[in-house]
Picture 1 (spheres, rainbow, N blue to C red):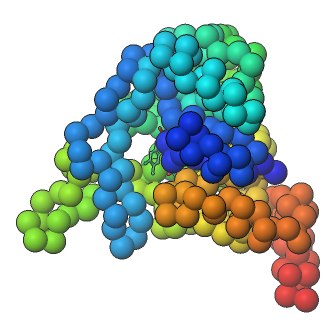
Picture 2 (cartoon, rainbow, N blue to C red):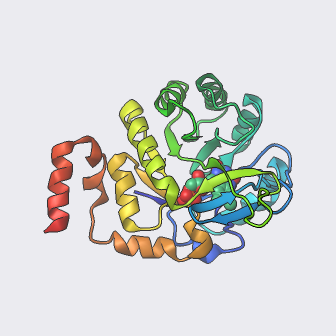
Length: 282
Ligand SMILES: Cc1cc2nc3c(=O)[nH]c(=O)nc-3n(C[C@H](O)[C@H](O)[C@H](O)COP(=O)(O)O)c2cc1C
């Protein structure tokens, strides 16, 4: 099982010591053209998690390839590149320009991309034609039938899934009763997302058996185990990195006595999970 960061939650060039705790670094989503993102405020803390409306701020494909990627390679950490866009060709062109990276994560769940099964599958199919690198399709749990999207992207050639992205939420300023974020809504992340992530991983593992990077509210070794039991092969930490940059090492320590291979998929096998629980209790 690999422990990764969730895309957009760590700048490995600014904090290489945080990235070095991980088995791989996932970049912020890269779009063909540079994007400044949304106007501030772009982050809001709520009692139930964090809201962000960063808006895919990134240097764009050309500056990423010529400037950021070579510097990231110098860190010596396996690299996963998160790719975004607004049509299938946007994604495929970036995939075609990438080589010598561990994997590509296709951000199919950014607000401006249609999340219908056809559209996600169309993007994956275009990327499949453009690269031989492993392709992970990152989906949103906002889709009413995420398992059908997972099946569609699997049929289109995805090698794995990344689950889940943030869910749209709104926070109001208690004094003005106006939205805190300049854009109005933002993506909810953090511990409140965990049950949503477990359900998505559980459904998509049952539907496809593809390797899954599970994420959403992971803050502890137990959170990792729960995602792995639902079918995640790998796990990513996101929001926790903002408040606790050493979380990956702590979480690894909490898992040191556990064989995650044994837990893999346990939630799909009633007897096995009972056995596992008995061992933990003993
Ligand atoms: C500030 C911030 C920026 C994010 N940027 C991206 C991004 O660029 N691409 C992407 O696929 N997901 C992005 N995400 C979503 C995370 O990768 C992750 O799916 C989500 O936050 C759930 O995990 P968490 O609860 O551990 O944070 C971002 C999340 C946050 C909080």
